[in-house]
Every structure is written in structure tokens, then in C-alpha cells.
Amino acid sequence: MSDLPYIMASLSGKIELETFEEGSEGRLMEDLIKRAVIEIFTKYFSDTNLDEIVDSFDIGNTALTGSDEPSKNYPDMLNSISGLSGAVAILTDDSRPEIVAAAIEFILEGFHPLQAIKM
Image (cartoon, rainbow, N blue to C red; front, side, top):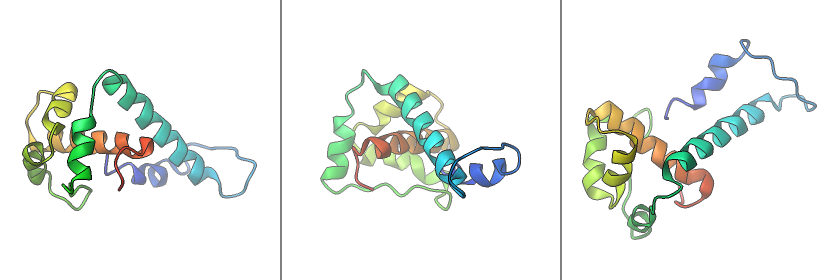
């Protein structure tokens, strides 16, 4: 998930987008990515109560994520953010740090457009 911003640069020149407004291709790609994340997030979590995760952040817990954060640090978040381990288990039963990292980033990215967690 932390690599999503680099998709636009990677796709530049490979996909031609016609927009009415000059320079709006980037916004269109951002919107498409955001919609895809929401759609897939909703597919996995529409029937799941994730309030425990939101509440965990509301009381001050934090999660350091992103391309600069080593994947080996992500599994520790499963114990520090209430409800996160259950949400990750919905996505995967693979406990390798890089898989856990991808799952956590996906979950947090899914919350962001829905404005459930203030980032």
C-alpha cells in the first residue's frame, strides 16, 4: 500500500487518460486508486465491526507505517492496536512481516477515505 503513490509515475506514458482539464490526470489516477481501495476494503470488511480499531486510535495509539518503516516492525502493531489482529486475520493467515505490513497498510488505507481514523 505504501507503494501506491508510485503507481502514477509508473503508469505515466503507458496509459493515456483524456481529461477536459489540463494536468488533471494525476487527480483522476488518485481518485481511481482511492475508489479501488474503498471497494476492496468494503468487500472484506462490510460486515465486520472495526470500532475497536478506531477506538484504539481515538485514545492515542499510533501506527508508524509507510515505505520508510521496516516490515519487521508491523507485527508489533497487532498487539498494540486493539482489533487489528482480527482484521488482519480476515485478509490473511500468513504471519510473515511483509504480508502483515501489507495487510495493516491496506486496513489503514481503507479507513482513511472513509474518515474513520484521522491521519
